[in-house]
Image (cartoon, rainbow, N blue to C red; front, side, top):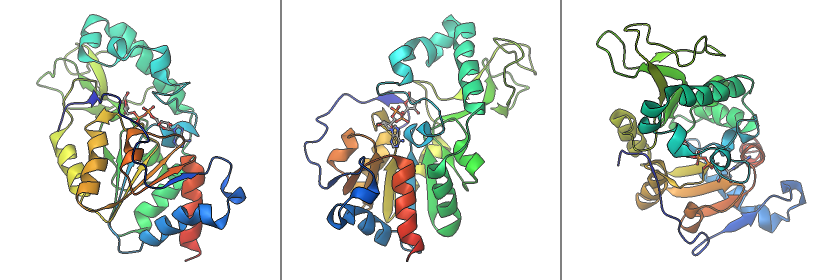
Amino acid sequence: MGTMMIARTRDLLANSLVYATLDAGLSTLSSGESLPLDVIASRLRRHARITVLTGAGISAASGVPTFRGAEGLWKQFRAEELATPEAFARDPRLVWEWYDWRRRRIAACRPNGGHDVLAVWSRRFPSFTLITQNVDGLHERAGTRGVLRMHGSIWEVACWSGCAGSPARWTDEAVPLSEIPPHCIYCGGLIRPGVVWFGEALDPEIVAKCLEATRCDVFLTIGTSAVVYPAASLIEEARRRGAYTVEINLEPTPASAFVDVAVQGSAEQVLADIDRRLEQG
Ligand code: APR
């Protein structure tokens, strides 16, 4: 576990256990169909150890583009030209233009109701861990405690050559960037975005904390296509360790086949509905 990569395609729905279609709106569901949400709420007891893994789908309602799917960034752009160290070495200007565009776009977005529910849960539950693949910082802006960022932050930068005078990463929230490509304030060389690119190693300390967090009672995977590893393997690991696993996504993913319950619906709507059940006790 450690290098970011995309899994090969698998049979999506082969072994789904429970599959609740909620896209028509929860209010229109019969009590039988909303049962999975009652069960999920009942699992979220005060002393349950809860771990949540989020992906781009949690930020979709805020206006942050996802990577896959009809409108996904990887439909318009090629990952190998923009999100690998080789791409940066080849054309740092092009890569930075893309990151500057994304930073401007994200800066105009606000956390949505899904981020807000998870932020409240991070304070309500004594044992709660939020792992995100997102680099947008919206969980932090919503007030979520102790976010584990597997893929870094778009609001951080690092010296491309790792010069001796510079810290490993530092925050740079300039929007737009004053120059493209931007330069290292310590050595004058190039800086790079503080994100993990394809083929790069993840921070081993973060990976260790994420793995530790799979030792939990309830594991929710929300708004991720579950095809990028090692993040996707956390779902399998949590299940292997006996967690009750829940997926919330607009559409089926490879994880739908083995989680305990796969809820098809928007993260913001489903989370609000589960939270309402928690509030009602
Ligand atoms: N609610 C729930 N799910 C949603 C919503 C929504 N409102 N909108 C979209 N989704 C789902 C999509 O169905 C899709 O399965 O979110 C998922 C987004 O998948 P990806 O775009 O692949 O995002 P993610 O899984 O986070 O990607 C992983 O890939 O390119 C890399 O480093 C990048 O961190 C990223 C990684």
